[in-house]
Length: 257
Image (tube, rainbow, N blue to C red; front, side):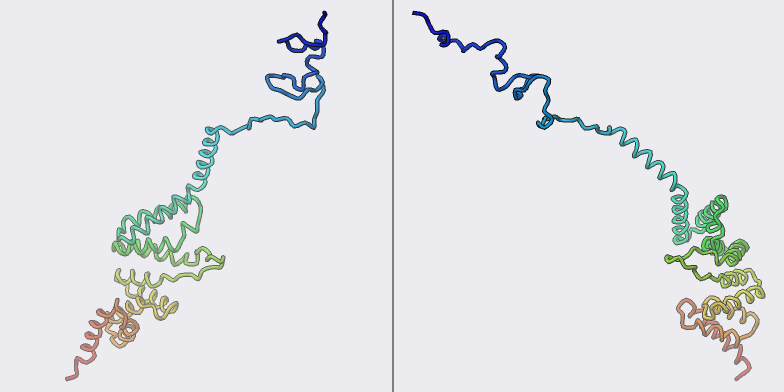
């Protein structure tokens, strides 16, 4: 009895024609993965394709290099301002500590930098010039102090605007000019400067006190007393004014028994 050709032999898989071997399977192998069976050469743009694209990342060394260049450029552009600010800070610190030679050195550096850069707001700053005057005054270098105070007075309106952009009121340095002249023995020049200062501010304590001292030297005791009374209640002048009042009383009532 012959076996039916349609019945596979025991232990063997059913045979299919060689041309239909791949098409009869629901999956076919493609580059090591299983993909749905579709005709070769045919593409389906609507079918999702799972692909992983590699991002183009900037190398770390390039980022570090860009950062370094930006920082260097920023420091270069801000170098002058940074140096000016540091010099200014040092000048103020020196004045606060009473280190007048150091204050002069830093302030002169500021003024010189303004001259070299053609920045009159710095080179002719009444603030820097007057501080140079104060520093030389404390060092008893009255010629230099007078020079700087007079220069500050000549440029007293050369001030930066305030926060709102409005011009600042000019400062008057005649009081310090008068005090320097008084210490130099120029009483006539001191009187002229101090009288100008009192026109600017009639309650200026230092101007009133120094005018009183000049009047005492000129034996004008009543006039001296009128100046001293303006500052008599001020702790900074109280002790000196009392001594002058005693002297005035002695001179005015010397012939009275």
